[in-house]
Image (cartoon, rainbow, N blue to C red):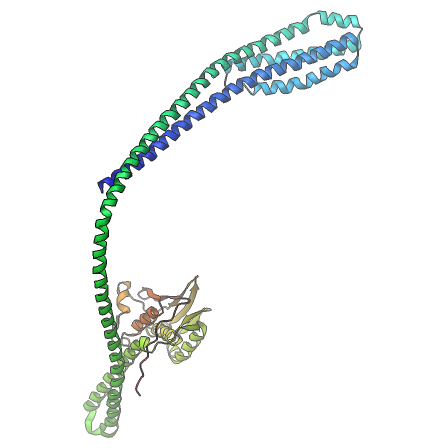
Amino acid sequence: MWTQRRIQIGFVLVILVVLVNALVAYDSIKRLQQKTEAVSHTHEVLLGTAQLLEALLNAETGQRGYVITNVKEYLDPYYAGVRMVQPRLDLLGTYFDDDAESREHYRQLKPLIKQKLEELEATIALSDRTNLMDTRTAIVSRRGKTLMDQVRGVIGRIEQRQTDIRKQRLIERDAAIQSALLALVIGMSITLAAIALAYTLNRREVEANVRGQAALEEANARLEARVEERTIQLNTTNQELARSNRELQDFAFVASHDLQEPLRKIQAFGDLLKKDYGTALGAEGCDFIERMQNASRRMDRLIKDLLAFSRVTTKAQPFVPTDLNKIGQEVMEDLEARIRRSGGKVEFADLPTLEADALQVHQLLLNLIGNALKFHRAGVPPVITVNATEEADMIELSVADNGIGFDEKYLDRIFTPFQRLHGKNEFEGTGMGLAICRKVVERHGGTITARSQPNVGSTFVIRLPRTHQPPTVQTIEENS
């Protein structure tokens, strides 16, 4: 374990070294790029000053040629030069953000250029209005030459400043090149050393794994033998458990069925006693018979619920496409009398179709809606709504009511057989209805739960698969 941890640490260190070297190399290359761009910048400045001076000289040459010869073709280089001066001057102004001295020279240059252009234009205008001697007198005044010398002087200072800057930047660029190369060499050396270390540690671990592989395979073989032995034992136990469950279900079905006949006789003989011997028995005797018959009726309901609970598996039918809207209509017909007596209302949304056991889904909705009708608040007509939400592979049904509700701390208890939250004198029933619902839902591969609040109402939520493979159908012949 410690060796493996060291290998992991080694690989992490290698990755960190590579990352650090990459960052250092990136920083060095970026600084080199910046220095190279700075050198290129000074070249652009020097080129810009030369082009500006060239444009101004062209304009001056054209002006002089026209004044001397009075031939308009000489104005072509003048106009061409004038058109180029201002764009060259503006472009040059964008180069001096990084140098205050050059910006000051540029500030001095702009008015001189303007005055020079005005002087050239004025001389040409004078030549058009007067004779050659007057124009030559204007030229001889040396004002134009003085302005041109001043322009050359400022441009010369700009070029000298930029030349000095270029020399410094060339030195810095060369230093950046050396730093980048040094960083790359050192980084590669450290990276190779880290990789060699990681490789050595990994090779040792591999050798250790190879030595331990034989022992591990032997241990695995022994473990597989023990697992196979335990699997055989578990299969045998599972088969016995499955057989025991089937026998228990068969017993519950048969016993519940056979108990109904004695109960029917008890009720029948009780009716005969009240009818034929009620006067002789007196009020107390008739009360005893009535209690006996009430107990037998409760036992009959309990047996019928037990039969319904066992039939979820013993009388299961294959899953087929089932229209829940049709099931809802059938449930409403079954509960029509109870709905009328309670003054309640049951509302169904548009329900989907799914693969299910139609009889069991009918029992599921019958139990849930029947409970909602039974557990309603006194003086408040029950209102039950049945909705459905469709997902890709699942369907969620909800049955909501405005009944008495319950405390959600009893949520697990209400789905357990024979569990009741109210006394039998408050609400009739055996406590099997929701247990049957849960068994039906689980047989369909779904889940059932509830949300509730006392004196507000309850909502039962059922999630069922839209399609699935049907389970093995078990059937037991019911004796009449």
